Amino acid sequence: MQNFIKDESGAVTVDWVVLTAALVGLGLAVMGVVATGVETTSTNIDSQMTSGTVIRTSFTGNEMGAYAAACGSADCSGFASGDQIKAMSNADLFDAQDEYSRAGLATRDDVDATYGESYTRGEDGSWGFNDSDGNYVRDDGATTSYESDYAQASANDSYGSALQAESNARPTYAADTAPTDG
Image (cartoon, rainbow, N blue to C red; front, side):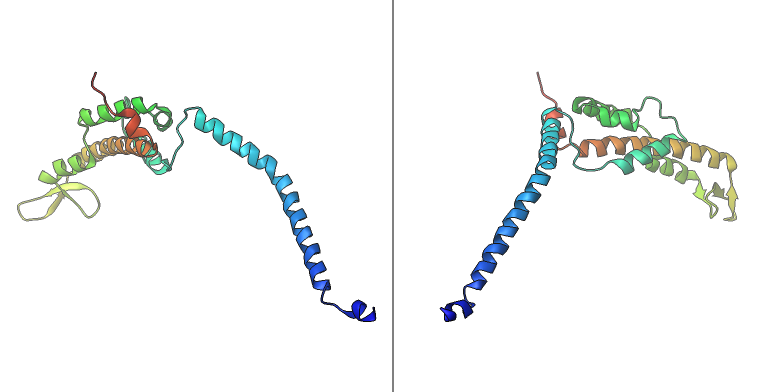
């Protein structure tokens, strides 16, 4: 009997049983605390997915910010605002992109090409021309026109980029807006 009492080989098994029971109890306690939050989140995800709203798969903040900044110094009448673009249905977004592409609005490249044909950019950023001796002559009238035209072209480009970014953020955009014959 004394050998049995002094024998410690069975004590390890008892220790593991107690530790395992404690871990199972801890796991159940954590599950009880987390279950409510997981259920609420799951319900919110389900309601968003079944409501037909657009679930964004990428962020469009940079394009919308650039668009808003460009409109600060140009005429953006006729363009939708960034919030209006985000709220458009897929069909309306498709129509806006189609209208934008058909409008033939001047781009920054167009403005550079127009002014670059007869003017050159000075070191100070102004527009001017080279006289017969090759000296740069600043033309403040051209600089003002260029800056105005360039600001408008920047707004035009930014609007197109904002429309494209929004369509890219919608995973079902192409399938939902494909034109059909009928």
